[in-house]
Length: 107
Image 1 (cartoon, rainbow, N blue to C red):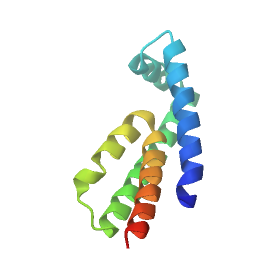
Image 2 (cartoon, rainbow, N blue to C red):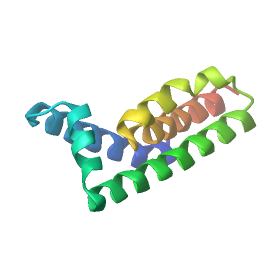
Image 3 (spheres, rainbow, N blue to C red):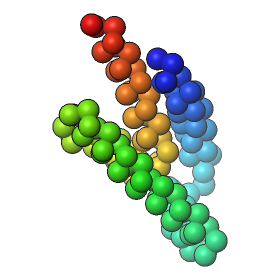
Image 4 (cartoon, helix red, strand yellow):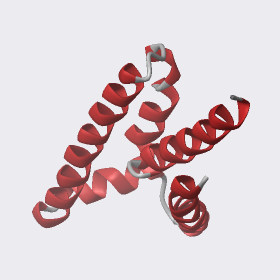
């Protein structure tokens, strides 16, 4: 559980902030993304975030494979990462951290 605490705190705080920001937004998520990509400086940040998201997806895939889990087990995390970037890997770390604890307690 120790490994899951920090990702859990960050996940809860950032997800709450994201939900609040989206509830206050005056445009859809798609319109917001299109607006970000229309300027060179903000497009660079978005591209940088999605490069990092792709690296996180590769890491989740390799970690999942090393744990001998089926690919379908990480599909929800990859889908969440595609939309909300950091929430997918954070959720993966939290679930992985708590599942390791339950696995250790079962033996």
